[in-house]
Length: 491
Image (cartoon, rainbow, N blue to C red; front, side, top):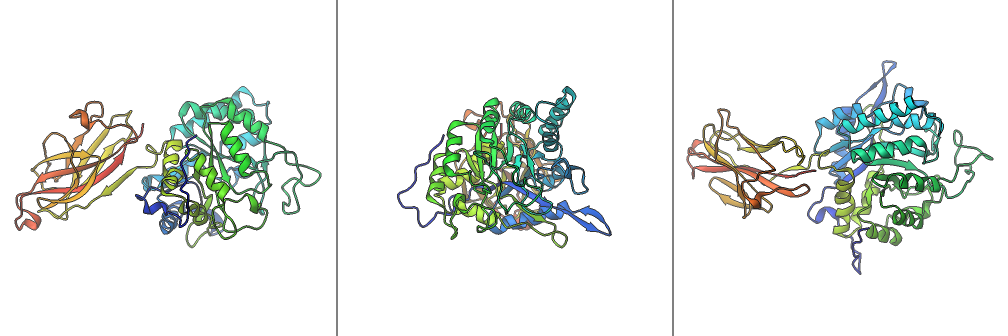
């Protein structure tokens, strides 16, 4: 458990983006992309993804993890069913903004259609193969999966199994072997209980009950301690048992349990107001603040927002703004922990969501608006396949890539030096006929010891080059620089 000390005075709240602009990451977002057209179903996932990014920009969310909903056995065969394979296409268009999880279509229906203890060897092999395919796809994790999903409106499925179901235990083993987390939706039930009149069919009707599931959840968590389980929608409780005391006890007892907080805009319906992270005025409750501070390396934000295709489908309840209002009310270090640091550690996002930013500014040169940094290959340290490149420089000129950890902004030659000393210089090279420069970076053999890169560290890279004609060919000092590239390596 990682505890961050709280200041004696918490008001006014420190905005997360005012403190070094951390990357605010939403761990749980859905696309609502299907609609009827000409009497048949069609979809617009690219439009829904673009709209998602627009909404993220509006409230300062940097990145988001997309995932299918947990399809039931019945709706998994419908015309609007989809899984991660569709999401890979839209994520590829926005690698710096979006990542994805998978398993809601193929894994979740098997869990809810095969009674516990009855899975055949062939069914277990099929389930494991589907799970491994998700892992091999580049997904950031498995999800959304559920053990208890209540029906809250018509067409919203009711699903219930005990969380120690044999296929969930099997998934824990596959997830641990692939070092991926599992996004897990489960209403907390401390004892068997009947549901009130706010839960119409297909939810169980009295005298039927929803069943105590915390004992089996503990069994699931203990089955494979290397499997990371993210209990989603923490703070959105429809039964009354997901209290801060319960969450604290579960986190304390199980080091592989994580929370993703969701905040709905206001109370009402079946949501238990007293268990929400914020009060009716939107203020973070003290007991939730202390929980976040005590388990800052185990708690994240996951809004469960649904974003549609403009003109075709509507958005869901606007949960992203109130969810991230939690971060806006935290001290800066705590906000960074729950919106970026913990997310990156749990989902290993250095390899999934591209941790690359263009920083500083390029400057005009003799051939155009300026040289621009980029990269090819992989940001995985283990793959050792990172290649630096610069485009837009004059052809046939000497140049050199250099890097360091401290950004700056100082005039140098006809451009700006974007990296402060000390810097590490790579070998001199010559730009090609198109004005590009390419430099493989051997992570196992840096040019000097001070240039050793390690996973999780942030470094800045820039390209210096000769340019005798100067900006616009009108003369100048004779040398210039690209913009800078900030990146972090993943394992």
